[in-house]
Length: 258
Ligand SMILES: [Zn+2]
Image (cartoon, rainbow, N blue to C red; front, top):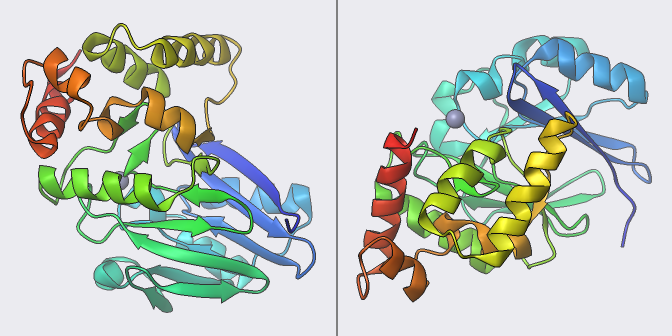
């Protein structure tokens, strides 16, 4: 496997931006730019020269640092075609299923609407990593703001089907501990979930990130990826219901969970 170097940078309280560096081609990407200063100081520390800015979706806490980072580095801004009008400085649009290469890095865009209508996740097969923005979180998923609940379920299923179990997953926010509390409320006997929740508590107690995660552990522990598990359907009083209906119940309960 080609070597990659990755730096995940916390910023704005609970956001992350991630730098991916490919030494062989000296290509460096950043995925989402919540904060320009955080991006530029990480670049300064690593000595990497930014070549591309990848955007998952148009929300301000993912794009507001783009103009300043673009001005400082000249990197090319890439993002979802469906949100082109809402992402300032977008130079290259990507659509669902599109495969492209940046320097030496192969990338696949996977359209995952629901949180926003145009949100795209990015899969880098040679690095074995994916960026799911505000669609898939560890032990959770994004709020369904622009799309429909069944659309979000379809997007999560798509990620589950497309991303190999060993894929390392980077998410837009450090929400894992709160997500774990909700997940345990609907799936209290899930051993994988209990183990992950304990590890998350330990990490947060030491101020460490709980991300990245990986698809295998999310498929085992994240209730939003398991809406088609009959045991989980039964646990929310919807035994025998369609998975999309179970997902809708889970997401709605999470919206009101305190
Ligand atoms: Zn968002």
